[in-house]
Length: 115
Length: 113
Image (cartoon, rainbow over all chains, first blue to last red; front, top):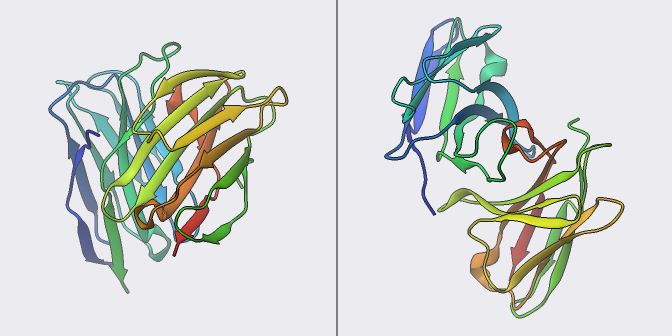
């Protein structure tokens, strides 16, 4: 199945640094989402984006829905140790409010924070 | 706690066998989604049910099937198991058909030996 191209694959950063990761696709998606997964857990939704160009924040996290609808970005400001985990982007082609469609996931960005 | 319950948490079985994974969605959620997560393929959408009926199919093998019961719980049946079927299987649920609203369970780790 199609996958989203997510980069970087992993990041080793110092506590307090800002983090940026992105996701691109050759196809258009109508909804973009960002998830975080920790060991032994299922993915947890962080941010959902429904409109091209939309910029949405959730605490120290900010995500953008690319204007072409083929990409999305996630930024984490002032990273802290509990930000460690794997971050996944996901896209859905179905329109908000209707249409059945599963999510297409990127392969994840593994975030490691050095104190 | 997402409110989605999956059982069992771990399952070890032999090649050629058949297993059933169970999912109880969040209270009131009508949609159930099944995903497979493996190291090489990542997270892959398998199938969606909405209020008892199949709504969407992803990369689900013919050896795999699912159903959603009147009480809205769902089961994923995996048969003629192969070593490559070893993976984490996640169930997610949402109140409507939009997968963007879905909350994931903790998964079932299947090991085929």
